[in-house]
Length: 312
Image (spheres, rainbow, N blue to C red):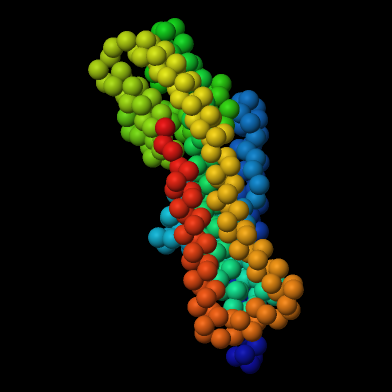
């Protein structure tokens, strides 16, 4: 028989064997998953749910890089249900859309500029989401301190009190305390578990609460009285922060209005004189003027934000 025919028959047979083995492996895995869900349902545990993850291959490769690890750490502090791979794809897609939009509405020169602004905006969005989550957590600290004080006064251990607070509080405090309770359940110390919490959501109020809990757990003392006093202090700081935020709201709007005026001016000029931006950015002097103007708007935005930032 022709050797080529033998080779083809052998390759076909090997392929069929591999297909059969693959189908069997898939069927076995599917059966194991169904059995696991059935056992969890019988024991009263909730059925594992969750949306399907996209770009899994890219996500696995990205997590091995330094950039992927940085994105993963930032996403963990924001509470967003995104993987590093998903965030990278969505960010690049948004940057490409902004690039094309700016190049078509203004001039081709503004495409790369808009792309750079899009990259900065993606990082700024993560920072803003982290600050927003931290602010919400800070607003829940008085209630957290009150629950811990009541549980401790009832004679419960601090580990048990943290678990109770995780069940009673809403997100983000409930989610973060659940992580702390899980780490305590597998043998981590209170100091280490609460220290990771302060790294994820840095704030002075949380540092004071964690220091109180750690010192009380390490050296003992009147933890109930300390938590009661801390609850009153946190309530006062919460009201103070709210008043300051209200008084500085106009300054905050001004900071975002400054670059908006620059963008509106460019659109207005291009609308009144079609092609003006193309002719302006076609020369080196015009490009330099645009870059200097953008730099000045950026400096103005940063200065206004710094002047309106008050730490309480």
